[in-house]
Image (tube, helix red, strand yellow):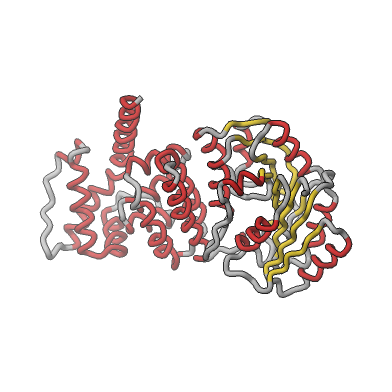
Length: 423
């Protein structure tokens, strides 16, 4: 039995696969098997994999007959089913690793008794060859080298890192004993549930704060380069992770962390969403937010240290206020101009819906706002005029941000008080 199983996944990457396999062959740890899984490529990738295996018996080709609907998940799982090593690592077929990557990861985990280990990585622009730091680079400032216990707070710290599996090394018994696999479905970024399942199941992680692998970005045909509504499928992972946590009695512990992850994806994707897909994005995430109370949403925003854009966007979705969602996602600042406010709400909600939203808003907020309590209640009839709407909406819009901030402070304070009483 080899000490290490390295799973390489490949699909239509004939220009890159040999560099990847060369970097695996050059590893300073030599007791390994490399399971190279081709997911039905239509180019010469399978032939290059087979040729490499013919030269080096440590390389085992797993050539799937056709491109699987499960994508990378199916290919990665095919490798896991065949893995025999005590430890399991991954490499994307268009990436490459430093020669001592797996030796350092294995030593860090084995010497400390950790269930998995993790290193840094660098992104490399395929067109220019220029390296750059990944989005979670600053998170490394808050973690030290060596062993970290994965109690709930420690687990939450590492859940916030980018979910990629190819900078980690896993004890195979961790994956087998907990039945951990990549979920197969019509997904993007199947790494996310796998990331959650493994970290929540593990007892400890060993940290190696060195750049030991390189991830190619902006490659033609790469999933990461996609910027259309297929990206919205990432939100399906919420329900997968939610159900997994619930089945293990862990939902209460991690639900705000999970929602904070959803908000992070929403913030990133919404900034890249063209105008014609904004409603589709709203309809995709609104059912997720509907599963959480407003205090939990505020807690998730605070836990993730989210800024004003994420807060306004999340609040609009949580309150099912599509007009306000459009205002936020469109990058338009709040306005005090009555005509502009009215036109915007009328455009996206219609007269009757706008009247209903305004009436409900006034009813819910009057008891929380001294200013609003001084206003005369608005009487809505079945034939509201645009002038009525302009008047009501102008007053309400002027105070919206201030009241939302006040409510957030009140709700957060109540939540803290509740926790103190329980403690």
